Length: 309
Image (tube, rainbow, N blue to C red; front, side, top):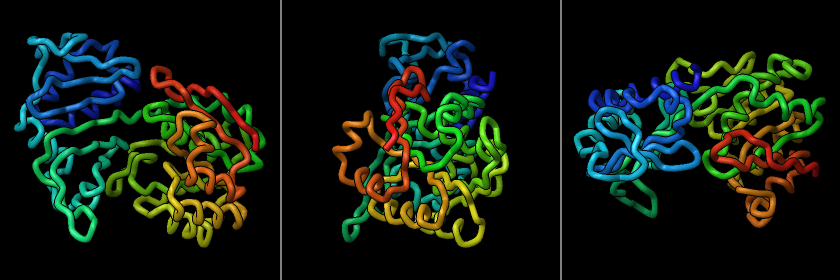
């Protein structure tokens, strides 16, 4: 039921006609959909982790983009984008320039359009032609197996996986459980939520239950980690999608201050992780004692490998 509600909450943020059609799909499918792709003049596409699906105007699931498939128009894109931005596109410009926005509930919307550049940086994105809405979900207990394997926590944990393998979902449940002492001792846990995806935060709201975590929302990872160390005395610091040189430096500082770092990184396997110079810099900080590989898009959060460093 909770997974179905996540889907329904997401599609209700789109324009009226799109929302109405997407809400008509079978109930059994609503809990499986991971992404909704809207392309101007093309059929609406749904991803369930294993295949791409389409739908008719009546909500019937189709397995090919034939003539019965419901087509997204440029008006659908325009109206949905305004709605997703809370009818204040200008206020979200910095996020838009990075290629995505995050909305309440932790939903991330990828954006395709025309970029204007100045001094090698994107200054605006116009003529939006496609959107990719990723369904954010909270699955209580999904990290129980991992906690049982790492308890007691004595080092940092780096969670690696390809897109849509459930890294952020796993991270949320880890933060929730560790802060409440579920399966382990209670630990002071601080979440650095740069884009609002972990907590589902937007403005003053947090759409995701993170237990007793302290949440620093909107802080760049480096500044957030140091702010946590200075003022919150965390035992555990949680952050998503590390990988830059600046992230590696911040992680090292947090670990040197005595906090265990739990973070995610993009890599489909341990071999790929070790081939990436930035990932190797993260591991070279000594902040991580365990690498966890998530390796399945049709079964998000499935652990396929654990490596103790």
